[in-house]
Length: 144
Image (cartoon, rainbow, N blue to C red; front, side, top):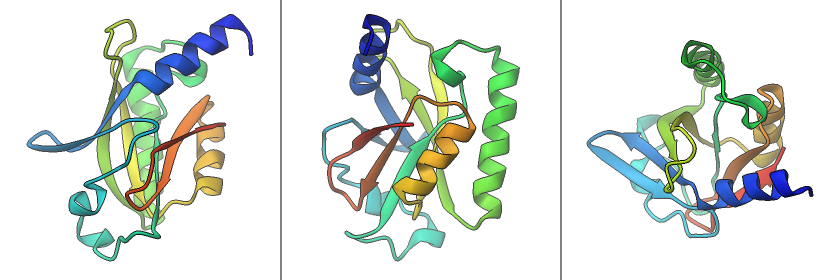
């Protein structure tokens, strides 16, 4: 891993991943338990439990290269439409750099999406990494 990649991975690990609606959000952090995810489940994911998979993906800034906002929004809408069309229960997300060096990015939290399919989607949208987990266990960062 070169120094630039090392710096990016550090940023991904330090990032704050907020999921939910503005009046009811939950913070996810890499390496910490995802406590509260079951509480956030929409009606379509009512049967979410300790052995249920989930993922957090974005289509913003592929390859960690800043894109124009309208380009990012178009790709994000495409990703969300695909997931909803495939029947997944989703929540909106926002990724934030606590240092403020990287701009906020929209993301999407997907109930029931396994890591293999999540990695394929991450690769399709040229992402370096995704988050994934099992129930409310530890949030994992996976390289695409």
